[in-house]
Structure formats: structure tokens, C-alpha cells
Image 1: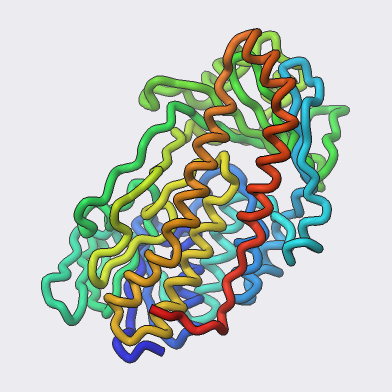
Image 2: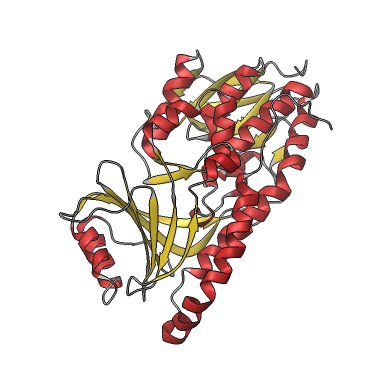
Length: 396
């Protein structure tokens, strides 16, 4: 273990925060996680933890709990507005190919499971503690000030506080804010009498004015999401008004979409879709950013949670193997930047494909999509086959 790193402060207890704390514990480094919210509150819709992320969780002894709460993705089917199939990606062999399958799970359940396991392992999580200031003027340590908790001093501070990161804004000079991609996201859960989608297969529908995804869960529930273009994120409708707006956006699309929307039992959103194509700095001395706070990737890439989980393991390895914490964190950034930024770019390209383009554009898309899916499947295989060897020593 790096002799200079004994204690770490982690700001943010989403997905990356508790995973980082458990990885640091395995490396022999003590940490405390600070979270502005009052508890592990329900949040977000659902997500997929890709094989690369699941393999990290397996390294930390967390995969079985996640697999128990979720279910494996079997593949993706792409259809046009008339519900005619125009392409597919088969994921039924992912576990054999990559060691783990992608696991579909409610974000709130994933979050709660990670927090519960971190606390079970003796890691302190302080809820209701909002970071207000960070002082790194002393070269020996960094101090964080909180509203709702005493100040904390540590060898290293890591921001895991998401896309609108407080740590990034106050402590990393030159860091860029996230960019609104022009898409709004809603998600929900539905039960439609007589409609049973094939479990584990996500059906993506290119509507004439919006994009819709639907996934069959083992209990017969339908998990769904809706994307549409919006110049501004502010003022987007919510609740029943949002359902009416989505129904209007899918007028003329296959009836399955309106059936699912009208039978929604739980609704989430709107969530504006942000990303950061390139952030010039993830690290400032003893302060580092992890996950969305460093490199927000839009959900179109299917890698947001998994990249944060990967980051956590690499940070822990670097602090374990490199004596100087400053050098350790700069090594983390060097090891991660190229891979992450390539996936962020892939996510933005995928998001752009969801934009509606009129009858002529739809005609070309329906005929060209199978070719793009073959290329996309190859890129996806490269992304999810990535493995991080915990036992390998980090070299600077």
C-alpha cells in the first residue's frame, strides 16, 4: 500500500462512492463517505450494469447481490414506428464471452444494495452532509467542510458526486461543466393486461417524433423509457401532464407505446440528458473526480454506472501501489482517460441516431441500421470485454 495514503474522504454516495469505499478498504485504506441527501432515497429509473462493471463488482464480492436484485439482459431489438423489426443485437452469450452478463436493475435498488453492503463492512456513510468548501492549500492533506457534519481532513479527497459535481466546481481548476445534449429522458414501470414482453429483451422503437424503449421483467412488469428532443430542459412537463405529452409525441406510432404509457404505475423524470465529451482535468493534487463528476456519459452508451465502478477500482489500485498520493491520482487519470472519452463519444453518436429525421431519413435509417448495428456490436464487445486485474501492480 502507498505509505502516503491512509485516509480518504469520499464526497457523494451514488454508485461510485460506496464501490470506491469498498475497493479502498480492500486496499487497506480507510474512508468515510459523505452524502448531501438524508438517506439512500429512491432515485432514477433503471439501468444496465454491463459485463465490465459486473466483473469489477465480482472482484469486490458484490456481483451476487446485484444479480439477485436484477436480471440478465438477453439482447436488443430495434423497430421502426410501425413496430417492424429493422435490426437486433444478441447478448445471450455475453456471460460465456465476457465472464458476466449485463444486469438490468432499478437504480434505487442498486444504490441501496451498495450502501447497505458498505455499511455492513464497517464503512461509515454520513448522510445529510453537503460539501460546502474544500481546502487543499496545505500540501500534506486536504480538508472538506460540510453543512450537517464536522469538517474532515484526509490524505485524499475523491468527488463521486455526479454530473453536477460540487467537488468539480470548487476544487478542480479548468474543469468544464456538463453539456445538455438536447434530449429529455423519462422512465417508468407499467403493466398492460394481455401484453407479455420477452424477458430480458429490450425493444427500441424509433418513433416519428420520439424514441421509446421497453423491457420485459421476470414478474411481467414492463420497464420503459422515452427520449425526445427539447431545446431547453427547464419547464419540461411532469406527472400526468408528462404522460399526455409523451402520448402526443408518439401519435401515429405503434399502439404498443400508448398502451404502455396509459398503464404506467410508476413514473420518473424528466431527466435532462447531459454529457461531457472531454474534461481537461480530473485531478487537482490530492483531489480526484470519479464517474459522472469526471466524465459524464449519456445513457445511450449503456456504460455510465460501469465506468464509475471501473474508476473506483483503478483509484484504489493506484493509491495502494503508488506511495505519493498526488502521483497516484495523476496515474489514475492517465490510465482511464482514453478509454472513457472514447465511450463518451460513442454515447453521443448513439444519441444523435435517436433524433427524428422525417420520412426520407427514416427510409434510409431502416435500411442502413443493420450495418451500423454490426459496427456498434463490435464496439460494444470491446467496451464490455475490458478487465481490470486487481492483483496487477500499477506502474507510474
